[in-house]
Length: 271
Ligand code: PAF
Image 1: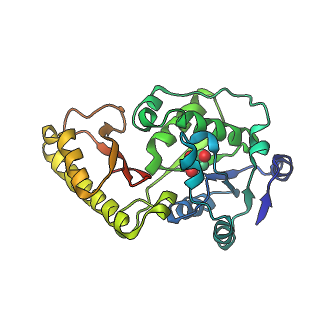
Image 2 (image 1 turned 90 degrees about the vertical axis):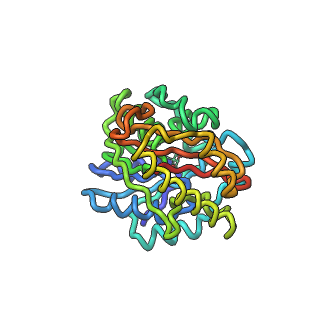
């Protein structure tokens, strides 16, 4: 396992590597990240994992400061997984160069998390665009728990004709149903129980909506979620993943997208 803190040293190292499978992370590694890494290791070539808590994608400074970090543990996990290359840039290393490609922000960035987290996706694309330019990976591995993020990165890649393929990976869940997320580290036992009940509730709701789409009433769902102990809901919405519109018929394949708060911790999921 080779660790790089400088983009110049990293570029030197990878200049002769043809196939790089890239897994970008903000650390706080969990089973979801491990599954992305393992998947990337099934591809020919080398796996490169980055760890960088990107301040530009946090719309609140407090949220950035409270984001769970544990580099020592992360490096232990990566070593155990036998990851080839690790990139741990500092702020200056990653933001100090001029990029070739301008960020392309698809209009879907205005929906869901885009409404409540101003500047978030611009910040995500800023950093991912930089990583893509430096690393030129053949593949980038992204989890569909962050469906909107993955979609917007794909749109940027296509629009800017970048030679990288997005590999979307399924959401990994804990036994209690909640999606693995670094932010779960900020939840206490009681909040974890509420989060688990929210997921159970939404799974059940989805079954009912599939039977009769017209039964879906945002107001009722929001009320039920508050009764379950949720503090605040940014959104609960249905989207057809192909059309990115609200489904009109129960035959359409759709998901329920949610962003909610348990105390100060904001969680997202799609079911
Ligand atoms: O999903 C994440 O952890 C981040 O948004 C990413 C893709 C690493 C960019 O900072």
